[in-house]
Length: 308
Image (cartoon, rainbow, N blue to C red; front, side, top):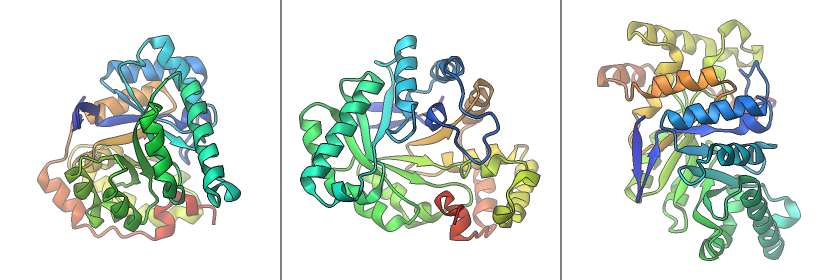
């Protein structure tokens, strides 16, 4: 496993995303939500493979509770870093500071209980708009309920750059992949790194779209197929699959601390560990990808818009 230095911590470049532990998730998901014994095997394999970071959220069904149980059973909770997220505030909560504070405190206390952690390692606002209440996370830091605060940002990079200049923010979660360069091109990766802000990248496989058989891609997303075919040829010329090319492309980006990968099976976990072990791409392959001009529509690059 390769690691990034974040302050005094060394974080594995692979961060295991656990939304699948709490609900069926992902356009390429064919096995559904894994049962607990499968989760235990996945977490054990990840940890033994050098993974020391896990991502979850209050909104991910039973994910926090399942992960907390697994960490405790495997006795690894003292050896890993867990990133979780405050549930999205509903309208009346977001409009009233006192209601927002009550909701945020309740969300964090429930996460601590489910994860079986007295102090949460990293807490992000799951929704950008709720970050107006970063001062509440600061107060909870002083109370010993969390160590680091931050924001999970959407695809448009303007807000992320603003948060990277906020002294209350120590971590950002951003979408990015071999087709979606919006945050990369904004310069936020390097700017955050210069301020010792961790950058966690999600959607490296575009919610599984980059790993799907092309014949299974839904009609409304088929504009991606020509780009996937070009990337497949690039990967083949370099002796690797499209998924490996996509993963190692994001591993090659300066300023990225860790990359989230979600899996449904132990075999998928092992495959990702193997790809991470091959580290960054050679400069000539990166140059070919960068010059390919694989421009996609915002709708295709943004999974939340796929149902529109």
